[in-house]
Amino acid sequence: MCLLLETIKIESHLPVNLDYHQERAVQSRKRLFGAEDDFDLSRSVKIPAGLRTGVHKCRVVYGLNVESVEFEPYHSRMISTLKIVFDDEIDYSCKFADRSALNRLFAQRGDCDDVLVVKNNFVTDTSICNILFLKNKQWFTPDKPLLEGIQRRFLIETGLVKTMEIRLSDIGQFEKFMLVNAMMPFDEARAVNIQSQNFHIE
Image 1 (cartoon, rainbow, N blue to C red):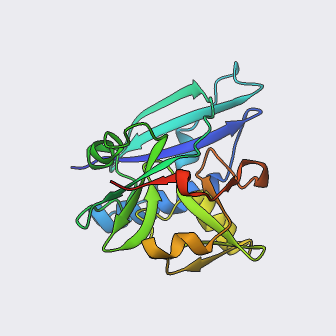
Image 2: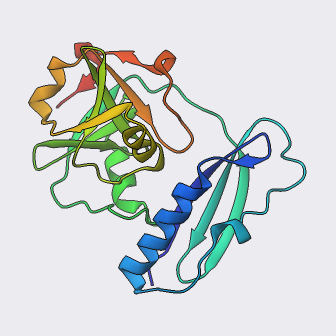
């Protein structure tokens, strides 16, 4: 049985967007295993008393049952250069614990901070984030991501971001990009101006 993963942000001793993680976990278990039982992530995410301040990452590995729960301090890193990599076969439509396919692509990053995966000529995600693009004061995200991330969904539902079909050749029409995931929320201070040196293609 393949295992799944939820990475939950813990901030000031509270889980962030736990309801979104819960819904994705239920949907993924149903899709992969046909599970219809009462599965509740909150029963497993027992935050240690020592995590009263700061930001921490909670990794929940699960299948039909929760296999492990780990907590660790979170340290953000700046990502401003992306290596364009191509993979028309990759499938990460569920948040699988096995990231070997993504790791193989990440290993191709060279001197860049991360990779941007292009599948069938459409921009998808980086190895760890969904990507947003700014054009005329409106933020867009690819409508064909590898993974429909928690923060991506939240931004779409709140109307801050719109989905858009984005091909590799479209990147030049945008002004900035931003990477988001469950640990990295929307923050215009992290937006990167798009220049030729941001995206590398061999």
